[in-house]
Amino acid sequence: MNFELEKLHNLYESHFGEKVTISAPVPPSGSARRYVYLTSENHTAVGSFAPDLQENEAFFTFTRHFKNRGLNVPELYAVAEDKRYYLQENVGRQALYDLLPAAGEKFHERLIDLYKKSLAALAKMQITGGKNLDYSVAYPRAAFDRQSMLWDCNYCKYYFLKPAGAAFNEQDLEDDFQRLINFLTTADSDFFLFRDFQSRNILIQNNEPYFIDYQGGRKGALQYDVASLLYQAKANLSETLRENLLDFYLSEAEKLTAIDATAFKKHYYAFVLLRQIQVLGAYGLRGLTEGKSHFIKSIPFALRNIQHLFMSGKIELDLPVLKAIFSNLNQNFMPQNKEENAAKNLTVTVQSFSYKKSGIPQDPSGNGGGFVFDCRFIHNPGRYAPYKKLSGLDRPVIDFLRSKSTIDTFVQNALRITDEAVENYLARDFASLMISYGCTGGQHRSVYSAEATAQHLREKYGVKVILRHLEKEDWLPVDG
Image 1 (cartoon, one colour):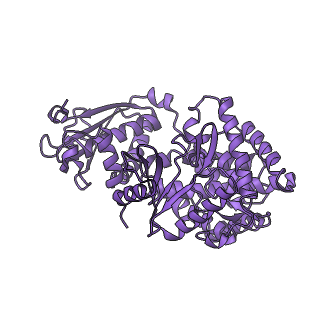
Image 2 (cartoon, rainbow, N blue to C red; image 1 turned 135 degrees about the vertical axis):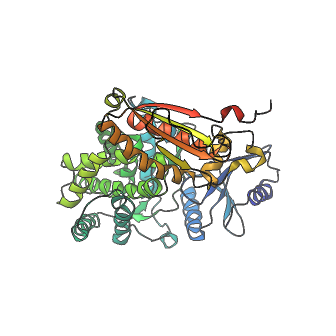
Image 3 (cartoon, one colour; image 1 turned 90 degrees about the vertical axis):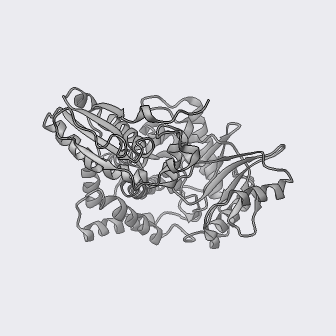
């Protein structure tokens, strides 16, 4: 079912009695759901479209329940007759994730305070909010039980371990999965489990956290959501901060229910492992299979988290196969020594070109031309009037290509080939490699692909990159 903005506008105008004056779409993420910020003269809301009716029923039921108990979730204003379009309270656009420090910078006091507020609010949602909640609407299962955990393990096996080239015996791996699950199912699991409790799903308004995207929630253990937040890959919290925040969470949860802190922590670190297994499945699907590079960049963080769990002795279970697999993969995904690579002789020339105008570029280095990738089968934004005068450098074209074409998968497939060559050339001290992307006009698809490749090579390898757009002089000027 396709998203129709007009239906959201009609629902908004029916509910508020005012015409929409501003409609600002939120860039799509990994799911089929779509969100739009809607504004009129006196009101504002988040217009939502979600095609999965079972998931929607869970979200509506949970939202009304939590709101009635004074928990920090957006109010549900209106639901369309088909239950696929609905309006939510606008609780701001700034996520906790947006406040995370850049690499190498420390967590500031306000951010730590927001983490504590989020954990305190989480404990209330899980314990107070979980009481008398109708779990019969939870989707796809009423509880995060053995079956759910096994799905997560297989998700990782088929979407990450196998595509990443991990070597393992199927039965030995299954035995480890079962040992882990057997232990996890002994944890107290009579609470609400958010399922995807991470900093992108925590919005900050007036210095208070509000929770979104809990439609996958179900009955489960307290530890899983805490592990999801404190071990979120890209957040990269220090071990000291994680431990301090965990202790803070326990102090808040103990105000609401009896907790054995020692037993809690034993299960907690095993849930951290399961959560990292689950997210690696997601990173594998979105990154290794669908070619979305920002998911691939998160893989080393998750692998390092797992490595630390085993090396620190926090996983008390005997899981030799999992320990060996993730240790080997951690070596495979370790970042390159950029300084060492930059000191070598290799220069990579990345170019965009037009098959129609200049044709396949010659290689002046004498190395024979390198790689040439044909982008012409990709959906072309240049066929549409709003994009004709723009190029692959411009945000509207970038958004078009990312949302309406398979270009990220195409580029990622190309990088799988070129990365191997770059690493081989670095090892053999070669001096030159050329990578060229061609499309019909050399203005949109090839430019985007060349830019993405150059950025990838600089970020991953630190090698010298020369980036050229051969048809740039022929691009149509933008009016004004």
